[in-house]
Image (cartoon, rainbow, N blue to C red):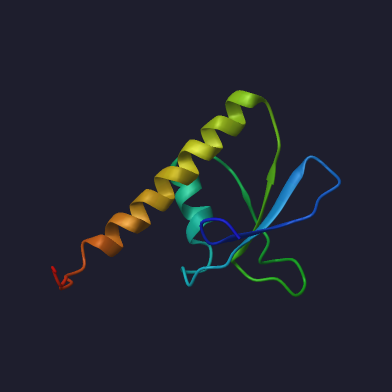
Amino acid sequence: MEAGFSLFDSRANFLFFKDSEKREERALYQYFLEQKILIRCCDDFRGLNGRFYRICVKRQEDNERFLGALQGYLNKKTNLLLQKPFKADIL
């Protein structure tokens, strides 16, 4: 599991993965939609919920755009967590 995602084996040009973090269902789908990148939310598949997604492996430029948007999503979530007040003990 990398960055909170579980990737399942595939024998096609699709990547099927689960958001294993406690993020809101369909959050990743909504974020990518805002970035004008369409990914498949698999909440209408029997037995799956809004944390399962599928993407198509495409041209290198498309894949790099997807990875850049995913990094932006993860950075956004990390920055939100870091903005919460915390106390650090300094030795």
